[in-house]
Amino acid sequence: MARREEESERSVTIYDVARAAGVAPSTVSRALARPGRVSVATVARVREAAQRLGYQRNRALPDAGGQSQLLAMIVSDIRNPVFTDLVRGADTAAEAAGYTLLVFDSRESMARERAFERYLGAVDGVLLTSPRLPATGIQMLAKQRPVVVLNRVVGDLPCVLTDSAEGARYAVEHLHALGHTDVTYIAGPAASWNDGMRWRGVQQSAKELSMRAGRVGSAVPTVEGGFRAAELWAANPTTAVIAFNDVVAIGFVVGLRALGLEVPRDVSVVGFDNSQLGALTTPPLTSVASPLRDQGATATNMLISVLRGRSVPTEPTLLPARLMQRESTGSSSGSARLRSALAENG
Image 1 (spheres, helix red, strand yellow):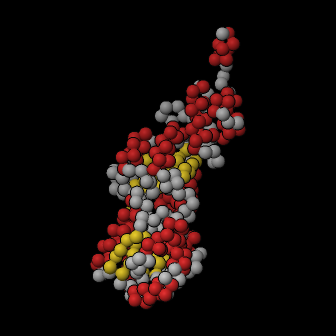
Image 2 (cartoon, rainbow, N blue to C red):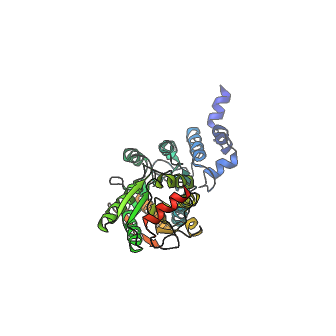
Image 3 (cartoon, one colour):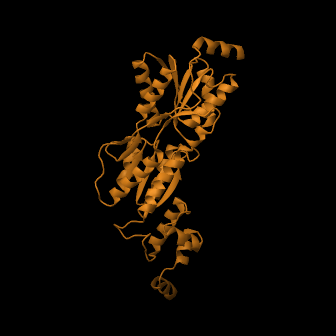
């Protein structure tokens, strides 16, 4: 009994926290010193153990009302190169303001996005990038920590997005100017808000230009998803295609080659996001460009403003899109020529 009283009176050390959290003392040190390499889950576990044991708090482990100086950015698929620039822009802005950015990959899973709630105690605020959660789930997160949403509009939450509908319009107008009379949109995930906006932009612009517009999907937003979409497209082919993003577009181009078709000789293809990967393909991909670094930085600065009690725009912050023309689009060879080529290789 006396030993227990002695232990309760002595100061809790970093070694006590390490034992309670099941990690090394060095990991505790990093987790409590605004780490750059410790995972969100580990930070949450260390903080919980430290608070439970009454470990002396520092700047990274605040009293109620304080801040940890940690921000979390949830991305839907870290393998997608479009997130590289988004994360870089966010990280640069966070560092400049004295914050550390932690990145969590949801892997296109609503369940993983929802599970992040258990880590909210480790961070001051959250950047939700292309979230798959329903609006109600996002608003539940926002009740616990300040949230800024990227690439989606959710109620009255602060939102930063590129004008996808306008970007789709640029793509359709470009294809129309090349002589194409019909276009297919290769859709992205059904839960993607951006997918709906891009399809709406394709439909509206095609109607205004007296073009026929069709849709194939929903494609998994991967190269494999784009490849499979080519087989579905072949059932009702068009000379022009707009893909949900560059990764899907690249997979679609590979799928066309498997069908014996060439880009842009037989089919013109446009992607979205203007990722570095698309510029390096053969042929280089025409793509709708988003100001990704600016978007990441704008959202991060907005989140920090909320944390510091400053006002932020109540309306969505809309950033401009632009079309980057490359060699994956060209003059239309006509649907009859395309169908003949498919028949020859079918």
